[in-house]
Amino acid sequence: MSTRLAPPFRADHVGSFLRPKRLLDARAKAQKGELSAQGLRAVEDDAITEIVNFQQDVGLQSITDGEFRRTYFHIDFLEQIGGVKTDIPVMISKPDGTQELAPPVMRVIDKVRHVKDIQLADFNYLKAQVKSGLTPKVTIPSPTMLHFRGGRAGISKQHYPDLEPFYQDVANAYGNELRSLAAAGCTYVQMDDTNLAYLCDDKMREAARSRGDDPDELPHRYAGFINRVVAQKPAGMTLAVHLCRGNFQSTWAAQGGYEPVAEALLSEMHVDGYFLEYDDARSGDFKPLRFLPKGKTVVLGLVTTKLGQLESKDDLKRRIDEASKYVPLEQLCLSPQCGFSSTVHGNDIAVEAQRAKLRLVVETAQEVWGNA
Image 1 (spheres, rainbow, N blue to C red):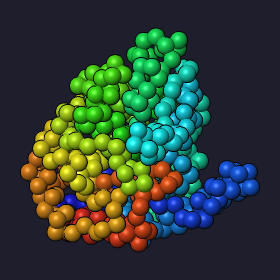
Image 2 (cartoon, one colour; image 1 turned 180 degrees about the vertical axis):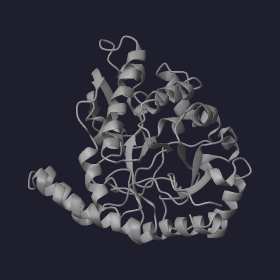
Image 3 (cartoon, rainbow, N blue to C red; image 1 turned 45 degrees about the horizontal axis):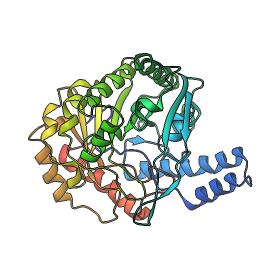
Image 4 (cartoon, rainbow, N blue to C red; image 1 turned 135 degrees about the horizontal axis):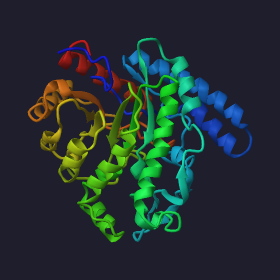
């Protein structure tokens, strides 16, 4: 099996890492006005240099900044797009008396536009820290995040009486962002998408229906939506999408196999690769992978980031073998199922376990695919 020279790599990862205490403390001080924005960025820079070295030491080929400058994997990016307003999450009381964090909702209140280069400065710092021969990777939220949770009601009818211009305006904003990154030397971007995974869950499908959307039609519409972004992808850039059923403090929000979205996701969407969570029974079996055409890659997220217990290498190999019954082995890679800290809060897992799981991914990939 030949070594992959372009991403996704045989041993890859989703991107976020547990924030060190000094970074959390600095963020708290900044929120209280006790630390300037420049002071906070200096702490972020130092922590990012450390997490870059961590990834390189573990043996990964793709290197992220750990999403250390973000509070949420999606809000920090989306709220910097012109025309978008974010309702910050609040604690709500449930009927049983317990409380939970209500998910944030992005609302479109004006024409969507790219008003500035959102990730450029962050990428330039990351790139400067990464060793030659390795690939700095940028993670951004999927454009579908601007539609799914709010639906038609979350998009200004004044500015978008018809949704067709909305989809194109969002794609254009993403295209501008990708071009700014490519000009700086970025060759690997991952879009994080919870919505297509949520459409695998019967309750989430019903919720979409209650908002006036057809859950059977949405996957195809979202494939077309993302394809508008792919159409503007700069030459030489790999664009991947990551599906997640929720990853907040080791909890999840949805369950269900990929069958309801598989054809739209794998056959109709024109991205280069897919990071699919497969760490437990919530994600179903590998049969939906039969829709993957030649030339695309699926990264199997077989290692959980929600629990500290280390997976068995033999079990991982067995599951890779099962997946290869539907997709040729050369079109498969391995990764954790999600990031370790999709929000600043982090999953309930130790830093030592984070390292062990990544090292397991690297070692397993080397044994399955050779010099991966």
